[in-house]
Image 1 (cartoon, one colour):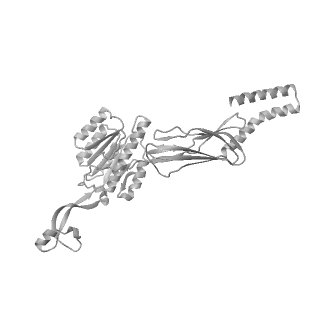
Image 2: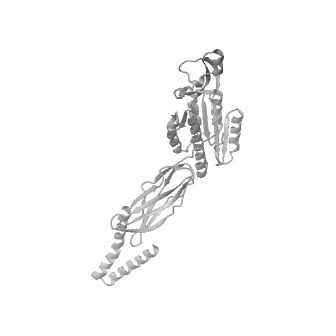
Length: 391
C-alpha cells in the first residue's frame, strides 16, 4: 500500500505539472481524473464492503467442556462489485477456548462465496465471544484501508462436565422447615422398628412371615422412615482469582463441584435449592428440574466483590430449623469463618468445599483447618484432577 500511495502521489504531481505547463483540455481532464479516481475507488469499495453477507455457525448446538467443534464463516458478495483485499480479523484466543482461527485474506467478485472453517476446543466452562471481529478491505487502487466492525459476536456457551460423585456427606435426619413442601419420605427397608397386624393396604413384602406363623395371624413390619430434606447450595460468586487464567480455572471447578452435588442429590431424590445473586434460591425437586439448574450454573458469573457471607446470614435468619448446607468457595476470610461457625452451631450440616488451583495461602489454609477441627465437613480441591472421589 505504501508503494501504491507513493506511485499515485508521483502520478498526481506529474499531471499537475503537465497541466501547469500545457493548459489544455486534455491535461486538465487527466488531472481531474487522477484527483477524483481515489474518491470514486473509496466510495465503491465502501459500498462493496457494506454489502458483504457474513454468516457464522458452529456445527454443534450444545458444547460441553473438553469437546471440539468446527466453526464456519461464510462470506458472500452481493451485486456486481469486486471486493479486493478482504481480511477477516478474529479476536484473541481466550484461556478457556482455543481456536485455530487466523486472519485470512481473499478477494470476492460479484456474488461469489467463500467459506472458512476452523476448529475450536472448549477447555473450560463459560461464556465466550467467537467469530469475526471485523472485516478489513483495501480500495480498488490500493490507497486506503477500510474496516467494517461486526455488529455482534457469536456468544458460545460451554457447559460444565457432569461428574458423578460417589458420596456427599449429608445428614438425613435434618428437616428444613422452609422447604417442607419439597420433602419426600422414603422407608429404609433394611431396618424395621416394630410390628403390627396386617391390613388390606399393606404390601406382601411388609409381612413378617415367621412371626405370622407363630401367632397364626398376619403381622407386618413397620420400617423406619427417612426424611429427605432440601440441600441448600451456595457458591461464592465474587472474583475468584488474581489472573484471567486463574479466574477461568477456579470458576470452572466451582461450577463442576456444584453440578456434581446437584446431580447426586436429585438422583437420590433429594430436593435442592441453588442460590444465585440474581435470582435468589432456585429450588429443584427432581431430575426433571436438573436442566434448569445446570443451565443456570453454566451461565453463572464470578466477578466483583463477594456477597456470600451476607447471603448466608440472610438465609440463616429465615430458617427456623437446621438443614444441609453446601458451600463452595475459592477463598476464606474471618467474616466467612464466623458465618460458617454460626451455621454449624445452629445445627446446620455444613459441607464446605474450598477450590484452589494452586496451594492456598497460609491464612486461608489456617481458617480451613480450624473449620475442619471444629467438625465441619471440609474438602480442599487442588489442581484440575477428577472430582468423582471428592468426598
